[in-house]
Image (cartoon, rainbow, N blue to C red; front, side, top):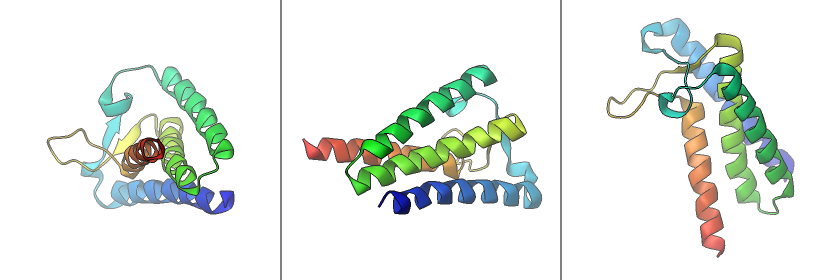
Length: 129
């Protein structure tokens, strides 16, 4: 079962990177370079990379320890999103956002996966009690 949930994380990375590449070539005017952290908060690139690595290690540990397939899927949504955004920071110097609804900070599929995974994980933990 670990393997099946792991495919979801890889799928998030692939979907996010492919959509960014597509937008980059077809509609580059939509891309917004986010050099900050969550929702555009300011932080140095090295701090953001270090924080990402620490969170990735913690999530991977939680993934391996979890006995719940749903929790593992939720963790992989978050993990896939963080890894994809980290790849952007390493290779592009910024996270590439392109979904802009006007009243919310611009985001991408990795960001959406992170938010969905976090809320799903919290709901699963709350439901258990």
